Image: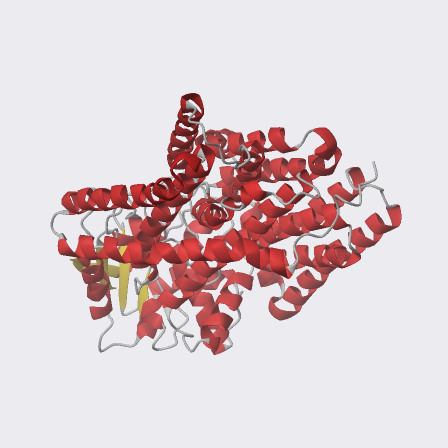
Amino acid sequence: MKINQSLVTNRTSQKSIMRDLLPGVLSLLSAVPVAYLIYFINETFTDRPERAVMIIGVLFAILFILPPAVYLISKRRLASPWRLGLILIATISVLLVSVYIYWVSSFVLFPADILTWSEGDFVNDILKFRLSYPLYSAQVNNDSFTYSPGSRLLTYFLAWLSGNGTSIPFYRMIQVVYTLLAAGISMFCCRKLVDITFPGRQSGDSKLWVFAWLPLFFLIGTNSLTNPFVHNLHDDALAQLITVGAYWLLLEYVSTRKKLVLVLMTILPAIGFLVKQSLAVWALLYCVYLLFFDQPRSIPRIAIFTILGFGGIGLVLGGCYILWGNHFFYWTFAVLGKHGVSPLRSFQHMLDVWPYFVIGILGGMILVRGKTFHVLLGPWLIWLFLILLEAYTSGIAWLRNHMGPGSLIAGVWFIAGLLKLWPSLTLTRKFHLQVWMRVFVVVVAIGLLFNGLGIVRIPIQPVTIDMYRYINDIEREFKGQSGRDILIDIGSWVYIKDGVIMKDRAPSIGERGYSETGDFSGILQRLQEKHYSKILIRHLNEPDFWYDYYLWPKSSGIRQALLDNYREIRKIKGVQRNKHDQHLDYFFDDISILVPK
């Protein structure tokens, strides 16, 4: 089927982009002073968090009522129930963003890189780059990361440009910026779907939606179900940005078939691979679209794209081999390739995030029909395949963060479909109780859906004073001594000042113990030689010891080597759990201080 020319008109001009972007930015900015009020209330009632939450609830009730009240007073009988519903949804979105800003800021500003298992390796790679140390070295060093280096290098480059090259909080701020950009591109994807669905029409019923789009996509991009690490030092934030960007290019090509867009599509898989190996799948996804859904189908175009797209990935692999040799392939392919996928766990993860599958499917059912069926079927099936693939690969571990990008794209389809179903914002002088009741039910349903999507958070302080006491106790163990002689299992912030690349890190060893892909002779020899003057280590005498985990098919021998050659002289007390927040885990437990026997 040949695409109608009126359908493929490029509507994402600078004027239309600013028209959509500016209201969304204003909505996000309006959440900032509300976040400060949340901070002020929590600081005032530090010892009474439940009282603080109650006061914040009263504040939210006032702020929730205020915009619709102003609208009703100004319009009176001319008030449209559906316009009022949009105002309520936009208000809820802004309030939820204000809670997230307050909640995430305490994590972003935390000075130590121990909020997740990946943060220490993330900072360690930045240190390596600063010191011209190979990012991927021999496995016996136990000091390399299993992901491609793009996210760490770009983060450091941006931090360096701003004069914050060694600031861990600034590294996290950059991750939040990546997510903001992903939300912005999601908004453009949504606009593209709307324009394809409503060709040649100035969608006046979307004028108010633009105030809610950016906050909603930002909330979905940071949801607690599939995107729990986008504010942490992890590759997820940039990987989500690249994925959404890849999907926007696909939609842009669907509506224009421009050769320039196709050129960008050939480049993106190689760029994506540098951020996360799995993003190279976009070369395959683009080929599938060109082969089965592109109309008119062009065999030369498919052939050229296949050669250039996969050739670009090959060039990147060749460059990595020149820089790091076989060590790169060991860490990024051999180690990850040995991680078995549990289909049962994958299925459980899919059930855990069922709301995102539902909203993506519903959005497709609304939009992929009628005249747009042949145009949008391909992009919708590409999303469905992508999120199913993400669900499958999430079976490698117990976390669901693999499904973050697919969830955000599901939100794009849902919101575009919701806008299509939303009645036109016409004015009426008559009061229809049934219409107002219908609006009430829809707004309540959407509000409840927000919680199911994992975008509702309790406005309490997740980072406690005791967490700062904990890192101060750790830093005290390094005072007056060279960091080169002290090993801590997780975290690299203590090595930044001295510029130390520390070997034998727990995440590196834990990554390879279960799959039996690691050579641990290096650390065993260093322990036997009492190479370290002091070792700070967690869970030494417990089953979930990352250096010698109880579920491993074969013991690494590291626990016994530690017990044979070192003795415990004291402990750093772990952080007391906050009963209102379950974020703390392994990284804030008791630490054993070991010295040579």
